[in-house]
Image 1: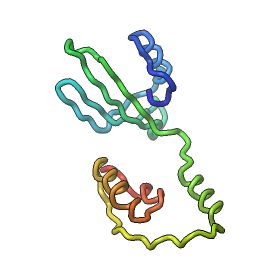
Image 2 (image 1 turned 90 degrees about the vertical axis):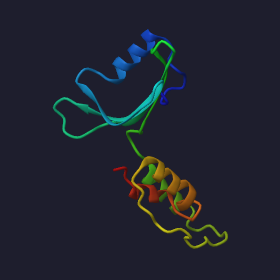
Image 3 (image 1 turned 90 degrees about the horizontal axis):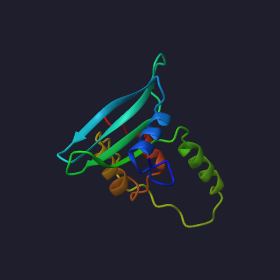
Length: 143
């Protein structure tokens, strides 16, 4: 679990962690799945019985050993509270009166990729190097 400071090792420790993370009444809904012969992954969100909408969202990657048993699992989830727009507004305000060189004009053409790899490539290879702010990522969605 990428939210933890140390990895979880051993079947019993993993079972305890999963029971705590996924209490009775919570449902794991797989959104996208990618599988291979000895590794795979999926994106997911959590739902709760009797509650409309989705909650926590994340991604899980796993590898199997030669006997077909789980050998490695990595999981990450979105933070429940997103500070990105608040933090961007704070940093913009804090730096509003800086007397440094002018920002270069935006030098990228806005795009709307719809796959995870397309979004990552667009943001890191086109938009951000071309002067985009983090808010550019808020306009993109995987479909």
